[in-house]
Amino acid sequence: MGKLAWLVLFVVSCNVHALQRSWDEVSVPSEGESSSIGSYANGCLAGGQQLSLKGEGYQVIRSQRNRYYGHRDMIAYLTELAGNVDKLGIGHLLVADISMPRGGRFTSGHASHQTGLDADIWLRLPNAPLNAEEAADPKPYPVVDIEKYRFKQDKWTTNHELLLQVAAVDERVARIFVHPLIKKQLCEVEWKDRDWLRKVRPWWGHYYHFHVRLHCLKGRESA
Image 1 (cartoon, rainbow, N blue to C red):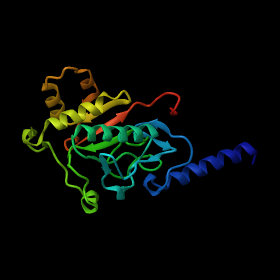
Image 2 (cartoon, rainbow, N blue to C red):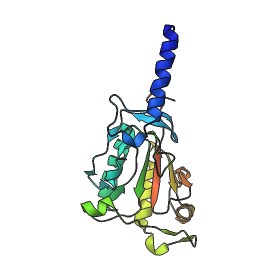
Image 3 (spheres, rainbow, N blue to C red):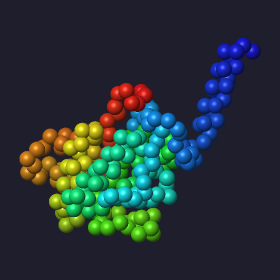
Image 4 (tube, rainbow, N blue to C red):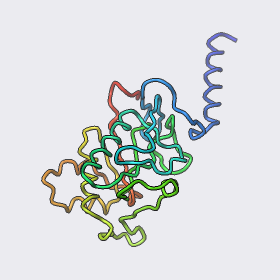
């Protein structure tokens, strides 16, 4: 067998072996510079960085899922957002799923979150960090009655509106996904600057959290 044939056989064997393992079996990121490879819903993450489980103005919830890794831009964005939110007195951010150590598809939950450029932030805004037990299994804060398709006005506050505005105005943000009724509520507010609302897109399922997606910057990521 020629050298080229052996090389092809080696590459195929490695790929088959990789496919036999799910992404969530990998517990540590790869070394090197952060790079988001592929698309948001079909990709992986090289050189992923870990978001500290606690920091100024935020904490990671359900850390036992090991989904608190991201591209360096996402980690920087989340820490800066939390700091700004803390200074505004909005509340304590609860950061949920970002990506697994090397990205890839979750065995349950999202189709995206594969390249380290997506993150979920809960709409529950506690005044202080949750204790360890609460953080491992936190109670959601739904602002929409899904069965009745009704917005829960009594659960919504101006702090939620301000949080979403602060999250969206950052130039690194490509999209923010929220439930359609949350988008409707935001559009009814009299904002001085409404340009950021273009980034906020209605999407099913996002009724107790919102989903931030960052731009994939050319020169830093592979297509």
